[in-house]
Length: 356
Ligand code: TXA
Ligand code: MG
Image (cartoon, rainbow, N blue to C red; front, side):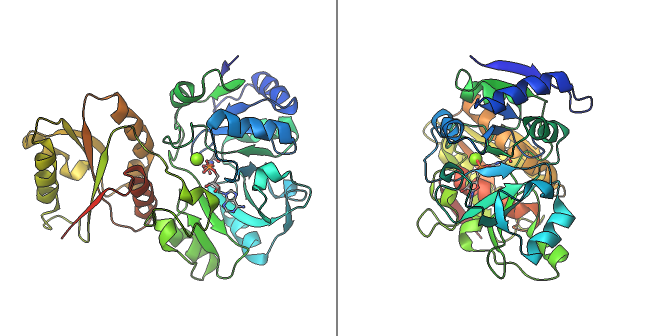
């Protein structure tokens, strides 16, 4: 049932996308690339098609979807009200990895909003995504194109391994740019509330607004469940199949002795013959390797863009590796560090060791 269409993002083949768009129009499921991760898309106005998204992913029905637009001109019919804060952020960040939660238009099917009075919308900065939405002639609802609970897909191979046979079309445009999902901001509240840190940082948002936003503990990935601000927060996320231990510290700087503490944790996990791998910043990797620990590099602490970009693909790779348990380094919660820590806390199932 599944067809793979290769589309070069630098030279978009409109003919192929027209085929994918006709699948969307007729109520099918089309996986498409965005600048963040791959999305599992369907016509946001077709309740039957939307149900197909939940079925394919095994997604709980109370977890609403993000509606993807070509621009603000598509907002009417999706959102009923655009507050001035939203206008400012749209002007600054769209197209781009910022999802805004707005009051929903009453005409939206309840499958999109899961019955909430609000809707999440974004305009992806990806030529293939934009062209697909345009040719489909409808806003496209799409969660990430992974099986529920698995790491989000940053390349078509990830989608194939999760959703083969469950979707109609997979558009393969290679690796996504950010490798981590959009930032979700609820602008129906004052101050706006961060629901999920993502590719746009809190610092960027606050600079653009000239005001602070609210960053609840749940957005940092600190809460295991309950008091869910965003319905998606209460579910286990991004989880590899192997146990993952996150080592957090108040100080990751050189001279803090942090890698030494990670080494002793990794070695104690290795006792009893368990195979351990350390997922580490480039900064610490050499030290771990010279201590005899198998190590996978995530990127340098000085370039968190690279770390964020490699997190999900590394978590997927972990499941293919011949190891029993993984230890992952923590990162300072500034800029993309907040996003990375949110994902790592969730991926570890909150198995966190705090060192000082
Ligand atoms: O980068 C992304 O955002 C990707 C690409 C495909 O656009 N999409 C994505 O969707 O990551 P996903 O799987 O995270 O699902 C949508 C998220 C869920 O966490 C859901 O709870 C939240 O958006 N969400 C959707 N509607 C909402 C609403 N009305 N209020 C609060 N949260 C909402
Ligand atoms: Mg998701």
